[in-house]
Amino acid sequence: MKSIYFDVSIPKILITKSLSKIFPPICFSSLSPVGFGEFRDQSLPGKGWVRVENILSGICGTDISMFFVKAHPSISIAALPGVPRVFLGHEIIGRVSETGDGVTDFSVGDRVTMQSYLPCCSIREIDPPCDSCRNGNYNTCDNFSVGELPKNLGAGFGDRFIAHHSQLVKVPDEISDEDAVLIEPAAVSLHAVLKRPPKSGENVLVIGAGTVGLNVIQFAKIVSPECRISLMEKIDFKKDFALGLGADQLLEGDPYSEVADATGGKLYRGLLGNNNILGGFDLIYDCVGHSRTIHDSLRWLKASGDYVMIGNQLTPVSFDQTPIWHQELRVIGVNSHGSEEFNGRKTSSFDLVMEMMQSGKIKLNNFITHRFPLNEYRQAFKLLRNASDKIVKVVFENK
Image (cartoon, rainbow, N blue to C red):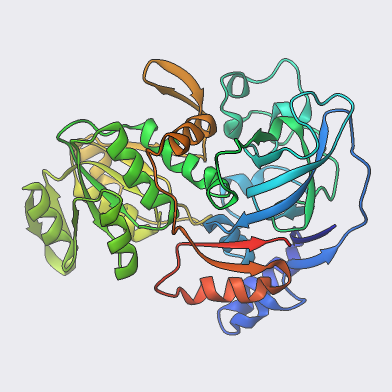
């Protein structure tokens, strides 16, 4: 098995983090905790496990943060016991090549995508499961760090991997490989929108038009066609893409003036660039999650407005928290996907996304802008670091 991995080696992490500021190529060297290696194929670790041959795998923001060692050791999840080696890649379309004796929901040849990437009760075969897992919200599992899992299972950034059958979802034949590799990031966007659905007539702001932001726009319009969506995005290519998927207007120029004009809010300019707006957006989806976007978003919401954090940087941030109490705002976190309530029924984010794909409600064509073979992973990450103006989704293809 060939795979890209991240070694949880404190010396390598510290060396790479400290030197990358003055010598960025260190992230592509042997000193980095990220490596590309070949591992001995192992037998399936139990009756409920499956081997999958990868077809396509997409690179997401979390993968980029890990590759360039952006995660800070002081964040909350760093306190949780983990595995000594993390295999990268969770936006996947692959084909089952082997099943354990206890697997009844998959057969050799089935195309699958990965739903649950992080450890949870079902993967650990914990019974009874925690409340989160019982309710279909595997990504907030209470048993994230309980016990041990088999080592060197691999993941999406490899030629094949091993997974517990509960991690996988069968992909219908009607969905192409190119669309199927986008199911997971689309599920993130849908989950975010359904955590706080827009209402008819509401003013909504989306910050960032990457894969997740573009899909937030699509799903928000499906849920509430009469909401008005404004977009903040720096890259012209992505602006045009977003307008084609349902964004109503672009906010360009001075952001505080633009927000005030778009919402009818009252703009106040204090000393030293301390700007504030009273009466702004009803709802903001932040698909970036930088200190600046959090700080500004809280000042761009109307009283009792909702801030939905989708983007994150795996590092501590700083922002003015006074708008939260002064304007009685609600801050809503999003951890990937899970269980949804939609049109009076309960279902999973993945199933709902696939239904919408098959019915033609969402468009994912042209999202994949770049493809690389796995052995050219350095070129792929260099492209992403340089932030070319015509990137939406970069994928590895296994031929």
